[in-house]
Amino acid sequence: MKKKAILCIVGILLVSIGYTLYPVLLRRSFERYVDETIQQFYESIEALREEYRQAAIANPHNPGNIYDPMERLHHRCIVFNWNMYFDSQIHLYDPFNFYHVNFNLQQLGQDMDMVGYITIPTISLRLPVFLGTSHQNLNRGAAHLTHSSLPVGGQSSNAIIVAHRRVNHAPMFRDIGDLTLGDEITVTHFYGEIVYEVVEIRIISPQDVGTLTVQSDRNIITLLTQHPRRRANMRLLVIAEAWD
Image 1 (cartoon, helix red, strand yellow):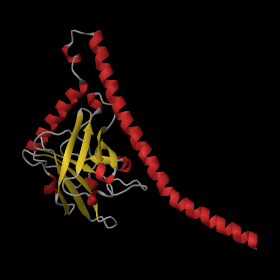
Image 2 (cartoon, one colour):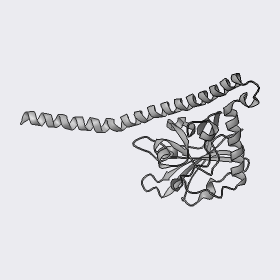
Image 3 (cartoon, helix red, strand yellow):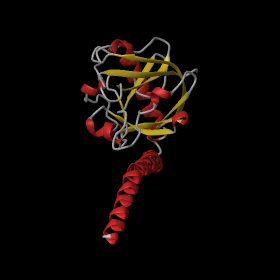
Image 4 (cartoon, rainbow, N blue to C red):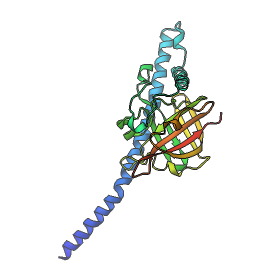
């Protein structure tokens, strides 16, 4: 009986330790995934640049080969954002019910659907940002909301970046409600990085998409997630602005 009691106690301790360590291991696994994904992002950029360099060597008389492909892609993104502004974003919907993508990086030579990543030091968060709020993208990081500005900066732009509160113990946007005015959010894209400063935090209904539209002459991003954490019948917004 004594031996069985000891084995029972040991079993309980092992289960308790496993229960405690399991979410920690999942978080660390996700952090490794983020590191690897960002590394692949940089490798993809460098591979495309090398392809252009080799093309310039092979055909020096073709002026199209002398440009940095990331500069060209950045220019197309800025043009896209201007068109989005003048289009008045009439097709903007609640991101958790909308999955269509209207900007294809593959067609422009980039073999990933990742447009960059965000870093928020205050809450120790770093997440890749993918194009389109599909279930797949929201399960592997943050996602850019179609029919909002691309997260590359520029005046009269509002890039909306969406994420769940958490997925499989990965924090995602779990703690963005803890941000305060003045906290910094860095968006790193394929042609540089932009530092934004939190200027507003608000809660809206899923139907209040007018809050998500571009504001003239402002370079802003909006982080968006479900609210509250368990009911998720509202939306939490963190609005940040870059001061050019």
